[in-house]
Length: 363
Image 1 (tube, rainbow, N blue to C red):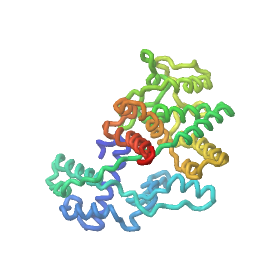
Image 2 (cartoon, one colour; image 1 turned 90 degrees about the vertical axis):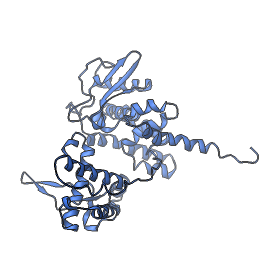
Image 3 (cartoon, rainbow, N blue to C red; image 1 turned 135 degrees about the horizontal axis):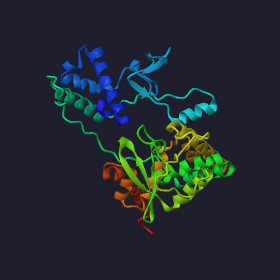
Image 4 (cartoon, rainbow, N blue to C red; image 1 turned 120 degrees about the vertical axis):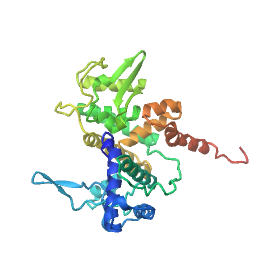
């Protein structure tokens, strides 16, 4: 697993699934993972679909806790995690009740678990362990590939959201940073980590670079992969506004090392959690304004579920209507063009179908 440590999400998946396999092997089968056979492998895949209740806990529960300055095993941790949605947490806070916990554990994709286990046994073989791969003898699992629907805001919701972000910035200069974050995530299809940075990289004002007539934003993204993103002309006024609030020149200069985001006290760099906390009031204000102006209840309620990642999806969904899919793929940082097409261009198909709902008679 150490070979995947540079990619936190991949490392987390591998660790979680292999940990689950090892525990299941000892506790349920009474044997080492080195002694599993095909029937055991099939039983393990089936086990992931319906684990016992005492193997299920809160998804956010950490494996270890700090105790007297040392790491101690957290007895509340479980191999399967259930999630409390953001909307459920918000409702619980508003009504001063406990949030509703989903009864369905996040078991993970059967295909992904299968692939991880196969990879684990292949590693053992390559490392000189004389062992048969019990998962390899199972016919490769193929799951139905469904069209993915991006979690994105409607045009109306986005208008309210950016409107409230601008109003907050007008009311208090400290929210110029808030407005910049909201528009940057939307306009450049950024992940939160693209603004928060990583262990080996932190974004600066110099990450914006002018090349010819165009502006680009350079990031070290998911999987520590470098990519450059085209910057919309319409985004530049927001960049200027933000920089001027920091008493900087209107536009960045080559090699500028000013941190892209800083705390209100001037400390460079802020975490993803801090970014989420900074933007949450914008979602709350937009929802309150929509309710006050009598907008549809379902559109108001949906803003309780919105996360910052929706802004990335929203920007890409809006732009898919008039951008080449390859160009959109490169700015999003997707490995595969089919990923971009499946997620964002399916929306265009829905609009195409909606435009063809006229009556057959009396057109």
